[in-house]
Image 1 (cartoon, rainbow, N blue to C red):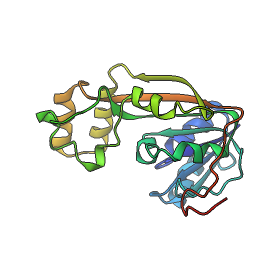
Image 2 (cartoon, rainbow, N blue to C red):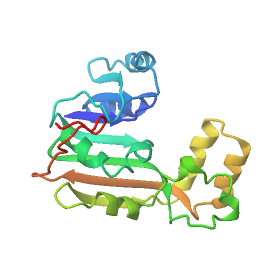
Image 3 (cartoon, rainbow, N blue to C red):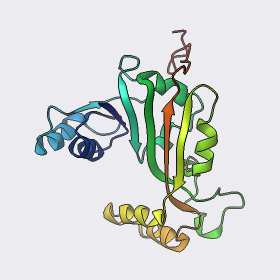
Length: 211
């Protein structure tokens, strides 16, 4: 199988997919150096399985129907909330291929006025944090994908807190997660299958030019 790991960061998720499932992984990220990621891949002896590259998710350099699966860990919220992104990215997925992600998300929608303990946290860069139900509605467009599962992970906020502690986030950030304790902030998962007759975009997502 060929797997696209979108927003792979330091490629640790790509290494995991390759080691645990024996798949070939294209480790795609805009922010992290593919040379550094190649070193990580080499350290695990996976040079023939994991292929790091620097790429913008809206300018993917792959043939249509190239991947069996498109996965994202802690990254889909940064680009996937765009209503045009799903019809764009699934052109690279085989018919009936799988697209899915796990990420920080909302247990329930944060509405105004924002709860007092989230006031500092809830800025423009966190508006992309949505609930599993929101993602189900967002992806449930006729003819694109069949949503197989959406859920909020039990005590997923603790995973978020573990990450924040491991990456030495600010004290106020840690205190926000601890005080919230899963009331609003958590971890979500979404899995869907590309419809066999899914239509593609008739124009380039990045430039707006006809395809």
